[in-house]
Length: 274
Image (cartoon, rainbow, N blue to C red; front, side):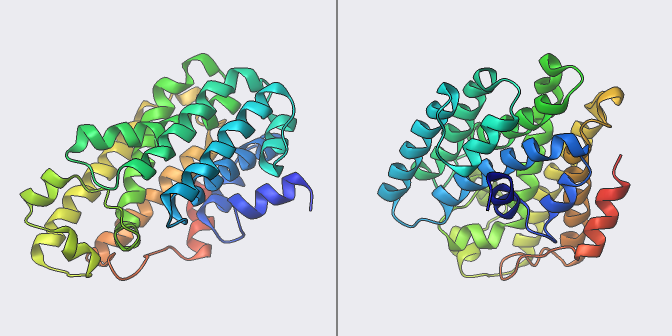
């Protein structure tokens, strides 16, 4: 298995939303974008699928060294080898790669957030930074890309929080701010124990609306002349909006299951996204 095949398997297995979103990108851009998504997945698995924080920190420290090795021209991991092969300017991307890793490192330090401004630091680090990396790699005007891509990445992250509410809670992480849960009279125990109620429905309606509004605003702010080059991000947004609609139709039953779109719907939505 070469490094491109590894990245494809890690980032975008057939039938996944990422798979269909990546297929909308120009063929020449797909290997680089796939490598970026694979790197994000490596970071995510390191912090979210390892129960011992000490092991997580050790693995993140390894990745910190590996990113430095990538910047110096001596990567060893298949994903960083793919980035070395496909990134046009590794040195220019290095600070953003460090920022992305630092964003995921927050998961080892914090499992709850007092309010939305505190949560947004995480959202910016993990969502906004990543979308900026993706956008800059294909944008017509790379220097301006972060101004409109970072809000889209943050919105995609907010949508993911809604989708993964139950799964995240079972793994000890709750990304709904504490003050908002208090406002709607929902407790952490309610989420962990999969307790549905009218209060939970109202809370999720609020969280879903924020994510949807953020997605729509970010899409509207994307320059018209960039939309074609950013079809992967546009497709991701379209898929996220459709999934939020599906969750709403299912009365926010996200605590005991992960609501998903069928592969054929994903294909259709991603193909139509413009």
